[in-house]
Image (cartoon, helix red, strand yellow):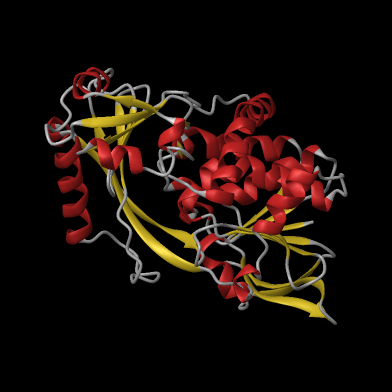
Amino acid sequence: MQILGGGLIGLALAHELARNGRRVQVLSRRRNEAAGFVAAGMLAPHAEGLQKHLLKLGQISLHRIPEWVRKIETDSGINCGLRNCGIVVPFQTEAERNAYPTAPFGKALSRKALEKEIPGINKNWTTALLFKQDGQIDNRRRLMRALEKACFELGVHFQEGVEVLELIHNNQIFQGVIAQNAQGEKQMLASKEAVLCSGAWSKQILKTIPIFPVKGEMLSLQGPKDALQRVLFGRGTYLVPREDGLIVVGATSEIDAGFNEGLTPSGQRKLHAGISALLPKANEWPQMERWWGFRPCTPDEGPLLGPSELQGLWLATGHHRNGVLLAAITAELIAKCICQIPLKNEENELLINFKWNRFNK
């Protein structure tokens, strides 16, 4: 079984499949470019205001995450930094708050209650929703490393520095890939089954899927350890506090950037302006890191899950902003399909809602 992509989704699938007794090989060009190393790690189907099928998928995954993390921690011996810290979404008016798509799932906060939850929040915010059920995980420093270790302990084989150039198939039946290693040497790697989870680069491998990159820039600040207890989720900017006081700040959304790497002055200005709009005092805290990455986006911002047009090739890509949130349910559903474990009716419906060709109607 080949996993085409060594990011968070690829590692989650490799781990789940290995736990089900499958021999797994992960082909990865550069694992450090994966969105899993870039994202802030929010687990926020309600704070993000997800809707319809995507909200349901996110809610189910949120429910699965504690047990999923427990298995990873057991296999790796590494704490993943899962925190049920709750997320606050501020608003300028009660009307805006009440119109938020997931408002029924949150607790309404007055200005006084908001100040208690988020000391120092900008005075422009008069009310908020608190989603106590949402949280975060330390994906950059803990989860990704834990998954790598867990996979290694279960015998998953990694080929790093390998770029998949072409899919091999005959009569629409998948047979393997043509790959190029770090030395520029090409080789045919045969396999009867594979999962395409190459994130924003997935369309370069399978041209028929509707995935495009959305660049995001981020930074981190070192705040006082207890300066921020909840995640603060604002319009285009969010602040995610780790236990040690590190504040992850994200993220720009650059739809037309393509795969242009690097930080931009405009992107960094947007982040600092967003900090000022939410928590002005945070701009006084020491700056630690700045980075960027590429989200894999689809036309409806939902993932592509399930079988592809090629028999034997499965899809688990296009998670956009919600890769960390949806990793648990993605790994569970696709692994069940591959291992021929019967799916519940609800699980079948989820896969139908996120099939790759749903845009062709």
